[in-house]
Length: 108
Image (cartoon, rainbow, N blue to C red; front, side, top):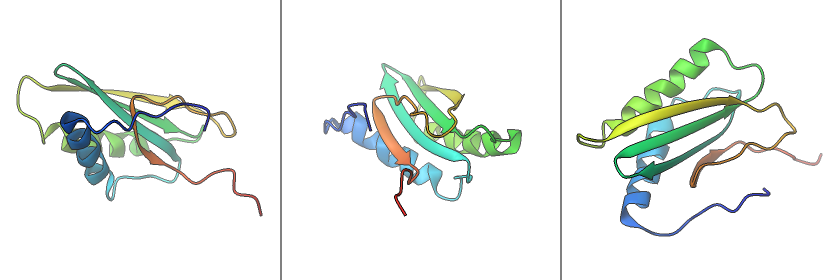
């Protein structure tokens, strides 16, 4: 991994990471490479990085995860989603908190 991931223990960041990890349970398609999140004031951002074979239904599955994340917050919080296609072996760029990363670069 060529990018520094922020793991500072701020209470809002901890809540967001736990919410995102819970929301991913049962919502991780095989083409998903990584999920990262961050917040700015009352806006939560989610970035979902896929292989080049992601389908619309797989992206919709991750939109369900975003809905579960924002359900943990009250107004005026909002959520944004970014779906990026990053074919392997290119490395995806992450938001502040990396909450899911597929195992890759395994040497046989």
